[in-house]
Amino acid sequence: MPNIFNTIDRMKPAYDVAYKFVLFLCKILLIVDILITSMAVAGRYIPFIPDPAWSEEVVLTCMAYMAVLSAALAIRRNSHIRMTAFDRYLPRRVVIALDILSDVAVLALAVVMIVVGWKYAVQIGSKGSYVSMPGLSRFWMYFPVPLAGIAMVLFEIEILYNHVKEIFATKEDM
Image 1 (tube, rainbow, N blue to C red):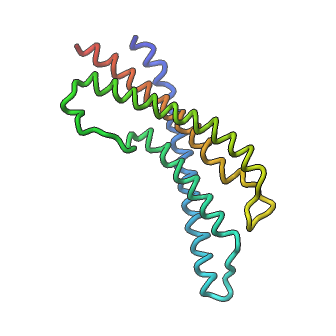
Image 2: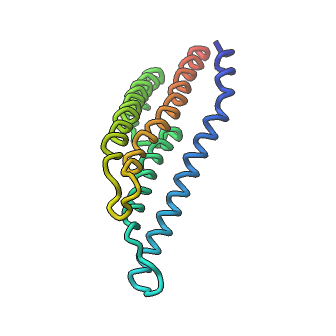
Image 3: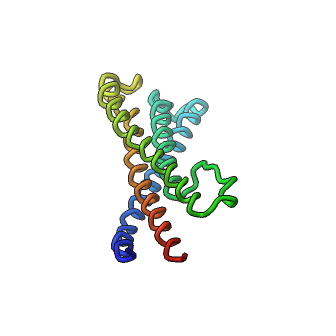
């Protein structure tokens, strides 16, 4: 059984690249958010700096992307909100089983985010446009949900694999 784990472990660099890409995207979105907000605020008080009408909608859209993508990043780092108060009192195998159960629930949520989020983005988002930018579809306002769902599925598969691997590692230790 350890042979299959060694084979699958070779995929870890691909997960590292995906994680770094999503993290980089969040950083770029944060920088864009800060720059646009700074320009909008400065434009209100300094006459020669423009205060674009589209700044609020773009900032809110960037924040939506950052919120859901950073939640996907938290899955991989195992830093999302969890209840661990009883972990030290329960047997290790029970804790792993409960972790797997919660990971399956999060995986199901991610699939729902992909399916329903895509449906909303295509159906509702494509019918409207940003108020201040009539040429830009509201699709981009709804797209963060299925995008984050894809990232969550990717990172949840890795976390579930790590839990299964841990179960077999603890079996060998016994």
